Image 1 (cartoon, rainbow, N blue to C red):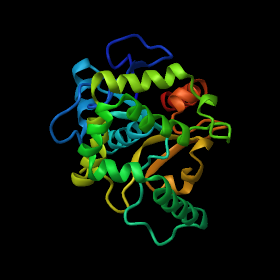
Image 2: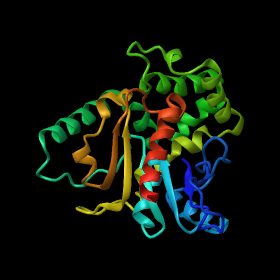
Image 3: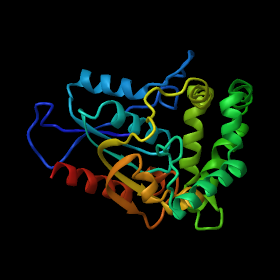
Length: 273
């Protein structure tokens, strides 16, 4: 998840650009595997990191778990965030659900429930028995590849026919698998689900609360059943830019980097303007 920082706030010259900081989520890929409970407050780590780097105002963007961290940044540090950009269905939900949901919102909640029943087996295992799963994935590169690549196939915009090669090259898929294999981070990455279930994030929204920093949200059609209606997202975010993307799925930075980057630029240019 990139953090976009204003060079002027860092003592640089004014220009039509942001400095970009791209940290690696603790326990994932380029980061070392963590061996203790957590991390449940990555947004605090990111805020501290940018303080150490000398940035006091910044924006953030992300998808998947990066969208969760980005939302938490906007919730916990509104005075420091110029805006947040989310390219994911992993948005905050009203909890409990309001009584005045529109028909579109009700349909979305029902679709999400069906998806959870049909596709959520991975999350059930990772949130209840991650250690048991971890032994197998850390022992077998074929098992690790199967666990990861299946999601790239199921969640991407594979031209409607489920052909994972329509979205990703063999090198891209093997590079992703190799990152988890050589760093030994698959178990600590999967444990994020366990920690989320057993140690809820204290920065989650209270009933009726909304993240008030400006938010840009991009919905990609490959998300299919999980595409969020704008009116549902606006219950939790102050949406100032909404984009229904022409193509792409759950991995937009890898599937459609150019149109994602253009949407991020458009949003932050609007905020800066």
